[in-house]
Length: 137
Image 1 (cartoon, rainbow, N blue to C red):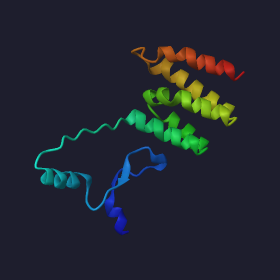
Image 2 (cartoon, one colour):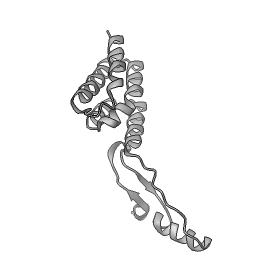
Image 3 (cartoon, helix red, strand yellow):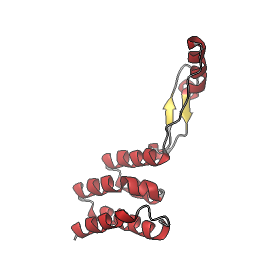
């Protein structure tokens, strides 16, 4: 397909990796053209943050009601991603009456913090998770 030559990034299920259309040439070639026309170099800084990107992808899946995919992708994500998106997912799941899913991600995050948070970075979240779990009973 002709359009595929203009696709850049990594195609993945659930939009978990950057993947975009850019035409008439690659993003870096377009940057060269623009710099040539301007007569000076344009600073390029990639603000891509994997934690934020994965969290947004999980939020998108939740917004679409794709609960099995949310649980699967959430479970396979880093602790930073799980922590970052937990509150949003918990609320979306309870609003959708997916209490078992809300409990599952709560217990998953609690276990991950207890097992992997050597620096203590996520310890404050334990009380929030326990409070949310108490609301489910």
